[in-house]
Image (tube, rainbow over all chains, first blue to last red; front, side):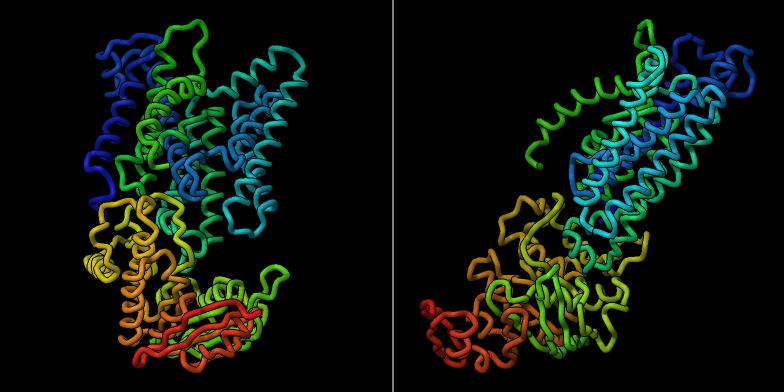
Length: 332
Length: 258
């Protein structure tokens, strides 16, 4: 049974792409460094300039790309299964928008100037407040629809807060800064950001990956799942915490990056047995690979300003997704 | 062996008293039919038996233990449930769907064992769905899907089975197959409780019928005791011809009581 859950080459193939993308992310960039110099750095030697570029710029950027992509991918897969809705994505519970609002507050009030970590920490706080609000709004109801409605409400409120900050921003420069953060980027990130994202993503992804069986049982509806021994309120708590912690932590370091969480589960699903649990791990790997590749694209596409990651994932992701939907449409 | 007892059971859904003061003891080895007009509280009663809805008053005992105090997994292991309707919320493969029945027996991260596989295979064979193995469950016909879901319930391997309208959407041949199967389960020592609308089927197969009206249990006994012209006229508001074909009763609803 377990052998038939994935296409035999799916996991090895994705793992290979992830490793390839990670290496490419180290080797490719705005400045060309010869492979021999890079190799020297990776094996512990190398010259100063190459060391700085590779170890302090490209390596944290690569790690963040993998972490954020993995989290968005697995969160999208888990939410599509939990809400039983192929339209679900990580932002559906309002955690991304609220985390973004926290970050925007840091920019708006100039806190991000005082300390570089003010922004990601406020973003995580924003995500946590959103989930707390969600608890109060959706109460103990077990229907996923209540959760979606509450999530949309929280998300809209946070979106209004972001608009308000843009509306009231003291000068065009501040508004630009906020806008450019909202578009999502992995530019100029340091190990501080990696250490913020890493624990959040590990905890978040672990909470979501552990619930695969609950997601499968929900195919039979809430009562069907309960009659199979699933404790729904506990499962819902794990789901909300996983998304809040993981996606909150990811958005805190990268800004809002759309579409990865929506499209990755759809792209890997045909190569699995289509059960919600089987899509989780491939989506984690696929998300990591896709975001890292998009980030390489951002660096290589020649332009005066570096393109924003959120823009590229949407521009490249949506056409791929549409073609995929046309071929797969009979299932939905 | 599983015995299910309801004591003074009342359930309120919103403001509506859906089940009112029902007391019944159901013992292993019997096929119990729950009948009654639409909205009589049949589904709510069996959901309360499983602990899926909280009683307003009274309690349900599964083998002497209050279902409200049992954890969901132990209820799931002793009583399998086939919900009403064949709603599937996700396009799952037939085999994966049937395999969900093994869920109550699995530890947090364990995989299906060879024994589990054998049980799944046997359940599919008994519900006559082995040939649908490679299909996606949402693409099946209503009757095929109903049988796949029945196989899912059988795969639990519980000593009690509660089925809500298992005959809906089935052709006559498969209706007989499913009733035969439920009776075999009961003869094998299981307690089978099923909601039915077809009174002839209920009369022919069930050992005992529970007739519900407006949330209350108004008749409880053998099919011949419960399905009398008087009771049919009073509860269903129909006139019916009741004939006997050997020892098999036939109930033909003929018209409304005016």
